[in-house]
Length: 127
Image (cartoon, rainbow, N blue to C red; front, side, top):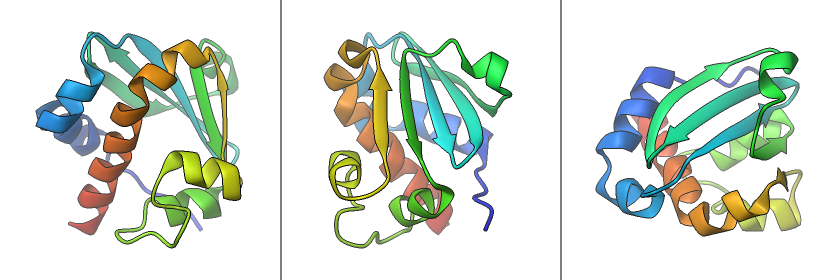
């Protein structure tokens, strides 16, 4: 299984999404998304996603928040219609293999922005 993401489309869709813009306003963070063993870094500056890409472990070390899970769990979370307890990151972290760590003061105020980003990715994957 290999999760494929269109980074440019995700960045553009998030930055054009009104709900994401409101939830992410004033946010500055480096969010590490570990999909299985593959780290990705999403850089958010002043509420805009400025980059999202795969990276190596050294590049991924400078994160504020890390969200990690096995690839199969990411696949479930990002399905167009997720199964129960995969619809939301908090439910997925309490019932499945998701972990959230790092500077949680960078996570909780922007929790809605992260969930909206996941919804944007679902919409993008749906086509």
